[in-house]
Length: 504
Image 1 (cartoon, rainbow, N blue to C red):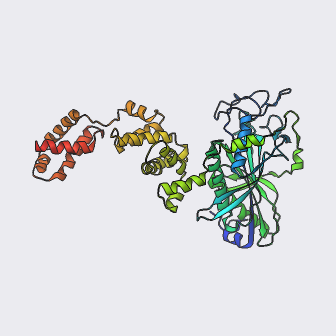
Image 2: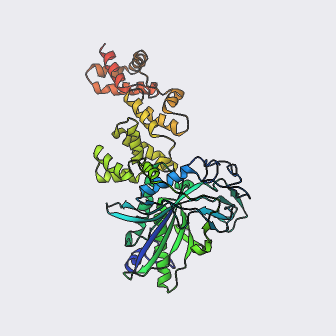
Image 3: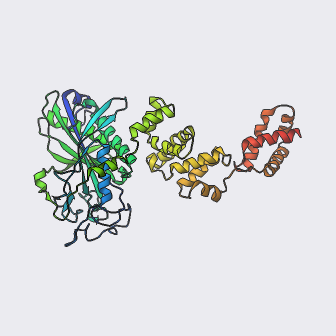
């Protein structure tokens, strides 16, 4: 939402787009899901005890020598190919020098003037079907930094904290940084374009299997560059860079807020300061960080301890052959196969359900049942937990198995929801939950006949109505049996037995 015009320093969003042209640029950092770090053999497991996944190399100790992770290079090439980039036949790593406590070497091993992939593009579809081509300047390899934990204070940031703790487990984790060229001409749709681009990129990377792209865990982070120019002037304004935006919604909000803030500065006659800014999730605002460095400030020079990267054309083509069906191609296919309207398809995509449904269908489930589970009951569970649908602790294979158990008559729909609850609670796979909770449908006629006879004996007036031809009265007996069996009886079979026993 745009900030109200009465807020000091901000301009109403409609006025911003009447008077200024926004120019976007987006840098996305993606942690790769390799087993080990970029330049050493330390594991990359998320959530390990602090400083337990470190060694002399990623701690930058004297005499420790790095070695490039081949799997990370493969992932970088595959990402470049999927983004329609040219893959460089030769390139070097460089040292990017700057001091920060969570970077143990006081430099970051990155690629500077010789990135692995250059000059690509990604077509991004907006909600109304309009397609915007976002040009990719480069995708380069580097290593992640460690993580600072600021203790005390109200914000969790360094300002106002009593002290800080450093966890170097993340230091050295392989990163790919994907940098767009300037994205002009977005006008009032700039926030929407930014969100759509990051969404499409996340979907692409997930389909490649190179990262879990969990923005909530920091394995995918977006830096949003934005500047404003007087409308139709063609003059580039001064940009700001909002760092480490960690959700799709926040990407859109950060662009919108920066447009209203920068417009306020310019209309007051002041200059926009070139700086990094931090996005405040709670308020939807940005605040100043540090003045933005230039390439010269980082004093780049070639990394002397690493040999150049020189992927052969044969290797590149071999990796091209591993690219999966891309998300937008899959959407076109499933739209036809599942007979979806544009609106239905868009709803599934926006809910983050399409890939999950497709994977459930691939496990053997009918598309209708798969859609019903993911967009109804499981979507409700995700909303209750405050997580994305894909973050639920249940797999498409689990959902497909539940659907199979219902189709075979081993579970009712009501029991199936209890099974899903058990899987979500960490009680195991669906069959394990059925066994542990005793949820299988009671299908033994002997047990059902006993329950039916007891229900008929308990409600003789209802039994007489059935005998008199009021068959709909059988519902009361069926309900009593279902209650007695805790919902585990096959209601259809119970009804058949009720009519048989009354007539007998």
